[in-house]
Image (cartoon, rainbow over all chains, first blue to last red; front, top):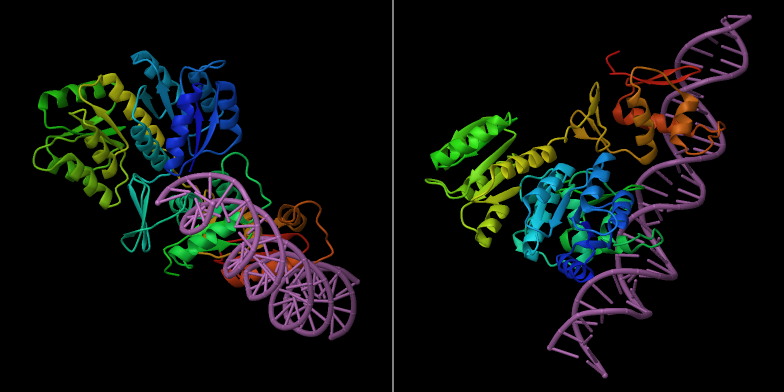
Length: 221
Length: 221
DNA sequence: CGAACGGTTCAGCGTGGGTTAAGCTTGGGT
DNA sequence: ACCCAAGCTTAACCCACGCTGAACCGTTCG
């Protein structure tokens, strides 16, 4: 689960990023609209948090540019003023949700989760896959009813898989979503993570598709 | 564009409904949770607006009931109090968005539009050829309804064929598409792949045209 | 400061699956 | 009818992809 954060206030940006990372999101930060737009176009994110008041390029302009190119990325906008017109601008530009500063970090997380969940096509807040269940709202995994303790990376990998259960998730996709910044293809660390995951949830649940990636199944194979 | 409005306050309900109708939505109104739940399950809506404070059945309970049955309907909840916990409850129950009363009608409309826009566009274009089906979105083949396990090359070959079903696909064309770069004609590896494919999906489905290439048919020959 | 935790690197191994080769079948031309 | 080329099929081979255990750090705790 990888988020693009476009926010010029460095302090706020770091604060948000930390909170998100604590919730196992991977976060890339862009300090201005130009960078943000470029990153959003070139990298692969699950959602973006976009400040409307940005230097260089206005937030709404960034959003409009994305949408113009048919970019479907779920976007939550942050608006400083409580102004009604600004929200409208945001929505007109193609935003999916908004939040007015100041806001509670928890609310941002909630809304982000709802956004991602919705765009992944899961209306139901908890996804069940065999003995495994995932509460998309709280981000908690359970195995046979008892909470599952996962490390940050294990969690991200499993989330990616559970969001697209029963379909093959490409190796590189997984890399991009799990690792912040650029993903180096020259390592097998992902395989190690998968191995550890398998040991925790059962080897049958994660099916490997040679040359492509992995697939989460209900393990009833 | 049809909306289900579940709201016990008759005055407010009519006000909202009128505004929505002015924007060309079709609106059904339910005055309590029981009716609302029933309507939501039996009729077909593009989205629902759900008041959390309802008589008979609580709004969150309605929502939970829908989600439990795998109901994917996009839902926007209305919460009277500004309470943080109530929003969380709503999200946990599977809401996609919320609005706290009082709110501007225009904002409701905006959010509804955003909601519907996002939940649309999940159409799966799938090609069917006899007992074989191909989901172009996920890239999954199914035979008689059950997923078909293919290797990388088998998959590429079959994809080429299914994309041009009922027409002859030239041998060399196939080579070029399947083997990146230049294709050496000095090998029968393609034939081996085709043979393995035939064994998996039935020999009649892939017709060989001497001197040209292969043709995928529905196997009803 | 050391211990525990979590992520990465490395090396060794097993195996899936792509290729090759050999023998057989089919079809079309003369 | 005969023959040869095109294509089918089976079996063997072998490489590289992925799995795994262990060692190696960087961080975060007590």
